[in-house]
Image 1 (spheres, one colour):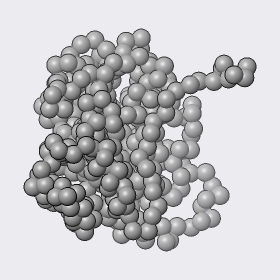
Image 2: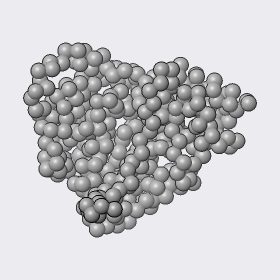
Image 3: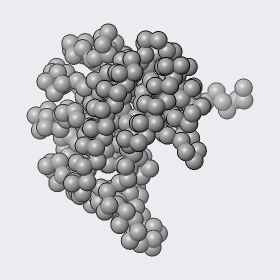
Image 4: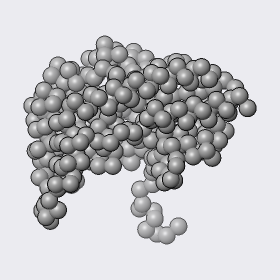
Length: 352
């Protein structure tokens, strides 16, 4: 080992899903939206004046902040935006989890949480989900340095009810509680209505799923003005210009087209509900998803072997292989045509 390597911070990085690029593939592994962004986004992109790229973007991201504040009926001082919800969450970890007490999050959850905790030297404890992969709210009723959980959870797809989520927030008013709502728009109930009631609650959402803009990287948080002020302090001490000119312009258009947003999320929900039935008919156990993906297992077939067989057929799903979920696959809800191709393959596989 070189002498300088002794001063290198070593962490185990997050492992993203595969990003294959094959001509006829069916990509159901990274929870991207199968439909294009709102028409206004395409129009704004075509009309974008490239001369603006020579100028720094507004560090306050005012146009996007204002659009989100209006859409979600909060004050602009209650909105923070960043380069995807991962950026927002990482800054929230830095800003709010600065205690010697451990932060709490589920043992089966978004795998970036332990990565950030280790990278930022934040003590943490994972709280086991129950046998049905559900959060037990009482397990969070104890002293801690903060709480974070996705709702609905990923990769399990299950929602914690609004009442139960509020119980966790109510029992932890001495620490910041972050509710990561990346998938909330697909039929779950948001806790955004609670930000006025609890000044320690931060709700984080993303444009990557329901607004079809994973490639643009836009995320946001809503909380009390004091929480947002602390987040901005971290942002301005790290990088004042986090959002590009293009991201700000296109993000506003994605927020403004509410009709298209409702239309596409409804299509995905309908396809998901149909998929639950079709997969169950093929012998799969399918968790009651409130997301744009399904978490499935089959009593007769090994999940990793099935994952590899699907991959050979150019159908990509997500296999984690982690403790407790090694026999599960996560399947993104695609178009009806893509899902029909999946059912056809699985029917042949299970009959063969």
